[in-house]
Image 1: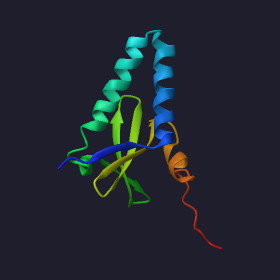
Image 2: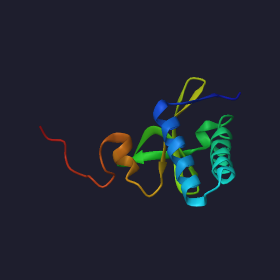
Image 3: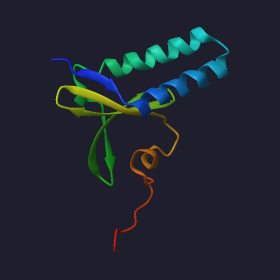
Length: 113
């Protein structure tokens, strides 16, 4: 059974930024279109078996988010019923943990109140 695929507004905005960045770097609409098509194809291939994505762990615990790496980017998605929801598509060398959770992956402080 294949899952439905949905993109959040933030993920769609991320894809627009990626397209624009590839276009700026290459000067080619075709190159930017092809890059984005290839990225979306890689995400789409997870629809049949979405749990084959790389699980995103935070401090050793599964966050409920899976990752699909593609060249310089990572797509992050959750599985909700029969829907694969892509929440963000971020640059792989960014502090994506902070973007996703508001905390850096390197913060190991205790939550004492």
